[in-house]
Image (cartoon, rainbow, N blue to C red; front, side, top):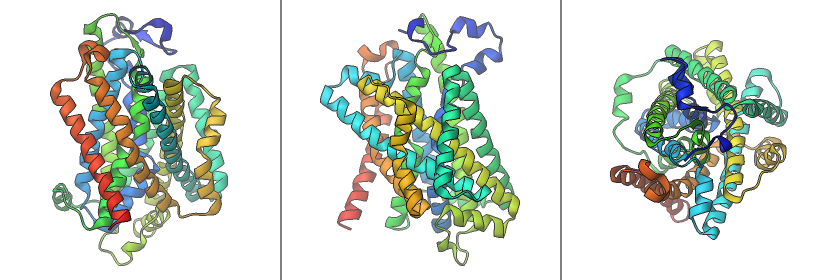
Length: 423
């Protein structure tokens, strides 16, 4: 199903990759899930996870764990779509869904891209501000320039881009590992937080924000583009072998992202929950200041560096995803500079007007949560079709579990609408 003609720069056959050896060969098959994982620890996660931990302690641990398990299945299905068909999800939507439906999905995907950029640009700008005192608006523009630089690596071969993103992911991981070692966490309370419960409507809103910040619509589209024709396969057995490595890739990449998200909540719960003035820890800036005051400058520095790495990497991935969405749904490419200029406008407005950054991030994550079903439902519909997926069509149980995930998200969003307009 794949062909060298449509393969990305740097693509190789499975035979060539095997010839690299027992270690280098399998490692070369890993990478796409690490790019996707960056979107799961973007600055929106900082906002939702720290707010949840500071206000509700360990109560929403179960939401982070559940959202991460959802993300693993979702990203695996997206990766499988690319491996099985040699096409990405937007292309398949255009080919197999009615034209009005496909166009409608494209429009909502572009709106979601703006909400994604809001979280990523604002977060990176706050990181630059905390580290170097750069004014927020100027920091947002600097973020755009650096994001273009990272994205330019993809034009020189997918592997360089993947390695750059994985390196930034590693910085975030190490930053929070350091802070968690300094702050500590209660194993008993964390275990109790695995029992599903809420603490009022505000905690439900945060739960939706956590899911919106974890299961990201734009990387549902992107992951299929990262795996299509990445490894040139000739037989069904070779595609199955590539898919086995895709499962490992998702487990490791998304597993690391899940640990980072949990560490954010653990740090906030251990440091701020129940403490006098904890309700004032409602912004990224306040969390940074609290770490500095209660733990020390090293902890605050690690937090700010992780935030900056998160914002820079996720903004690059977001731009890449936006190009995939536009090209797949409507067969159109526009210059990356123009695309970035359009989608970053809401973020620059927030920064320029001095609006509350953390509130803006949380709202952006709730908006993303509403966009998830529009990516999940078409993917589930397509991956259950043998005429689309061939021998890699979903098993019935996989389709049922994926449908249940989509159903939970839709019900949660319906509750939020009811609470907003009626409650």
